[in-house]
Amino acid sequence: MYTLIGIPQSRAFRPLWMLHELGLEFEYRAEAPQSDPVLRHNPLGKVPVLLVDETPLTDSTAILMYLADRHDAFTRPAGTLDRARQDGVTHFLLDELDAALWTAARHSFILPEERRVPAIKDSLKWEVERALTRLSERLGAHPFLMGDDMTVPDIIAGHCLGWAEVAGFPTGDANLSSYLERLRDRPAYRKAAEAGEV
Image (cartoon, rainbow, N blue to C red; front, side, top):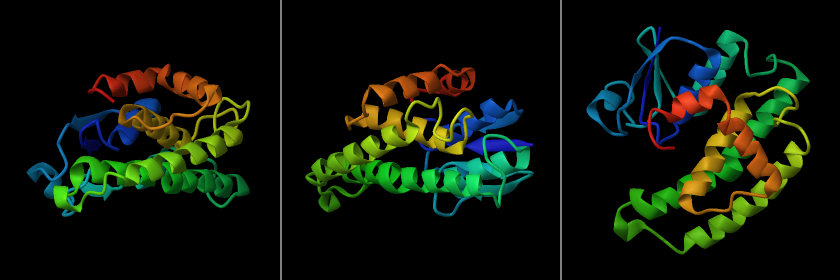
């Protein structure tokens, strides 16, 4: 039995989407970061938290990979070159897109006001734009980042592209726009989106 904790306007959207893709039964608790229910399972207060038979797992990517490996879906087999390539795409997304968007959010409303550096966002937008160019090249004419089948990196990329859109960051070219539209057309994405604005 899985229990997912975290609001959908956060990285908790990623495992929420994945759980729907897998067609699994799960309990969902929409709790904000740093709330008591979250702190009970993650002393850092961050979401998402996935309870697996009451054992907490944290970090959205770790949760995605656990679910993919456990259910043998949305991933390439561990120990293969294809899996190494998939992991490379995953880390590219985390390093180049997720990190820049998170830094922008921190300097917009998360850090104490006296610690924010609003001017950093111009540099971050430039970084995101460069990363999106490379992402579009990686996608090419394929429907998904690893070819014909959707994998974990597509969930991360779909979430980051939506995050960029909401934050007023570049969202890429027509190739990436079509890609995001394909992802958003998936029934599992729509189910996850029903949990709140994303």
